[in-house]
Image (tube, rainbow, N blue to C red):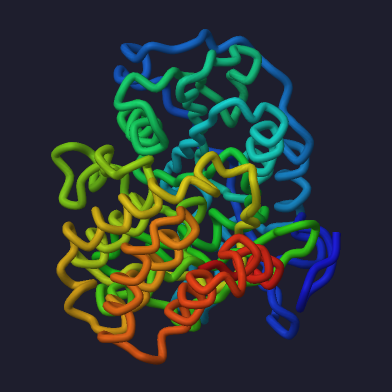
Length: 394
């Protein structure tokens, strides 16, 4: 695979961070904590039996090798001076990982292997939620990193599948991973470290690498804290849902942030919506390293469903007045609406949204793309593919 900026495999040995970024290591001490029992929510949920399975490559043996040589009583240090030292191994919070999936078995197994290969010192549990597909009981395991397999019992779609997993967990923290994405081995350790070091923080993200046609491009945010103002001005596509980490209780029905929105058209932009709701409570902690590799292309079920893209953007504008109140942010969304309308062949709406784009920000480049598409000079799909090759989108 060709990788721009940095080279090497996405396995923690060489790459997954921009050139010149210093690698940090962690020393952990103590014995692994005792794993918790399956929660009552898990037991009550519609589920597939947890037949024992063997740990994929990079499992227990690899994690022990990563921690060999640590002296007893030595704290784990992540990206900070001595006063930022992390807790002992027994004190790292339990993390549950929700992986929604639908008819992508090969990609799912790669994503699952990458999650199980995390060098995270604390308890880790995984729930694979099958959405509109028959669950695969062979994925279930009962080892030190158990995998529970469930069927989505909520609203069909990505949001309902994530909420199914959140409700079935009993861990302090919850993380999301899409079934076609890969985590860097240190992803959880670095994110949890950043989250627990920030008073009152409830939500964390990380940067990503975008893989398209065999080439990967890092996408960084340039900040360690994300606010509502950031998110109103830009979707910040590097804040991908596969990099989300949150305090689980905040995402419950009774939580202060609330569950993933299941009324988002096609389960699109529900991640942007969740980020804005979280940022209203407290600035989001961001680890600006590409700790997730995101696969772009036709593996997405909605890559070329323009009507769904349009509906979800209008849903966001109605739901979050902060976007329309920020002229550059509003122009960005109007420009997207213009492009998707042009791609869908709706010239009247494309002209309408192009005018709104220019009215809010005449420098918005999406207006030029929409105009070129309207005049027949170029197809939106052609521009989109060219941008994807550089790790960007419309």
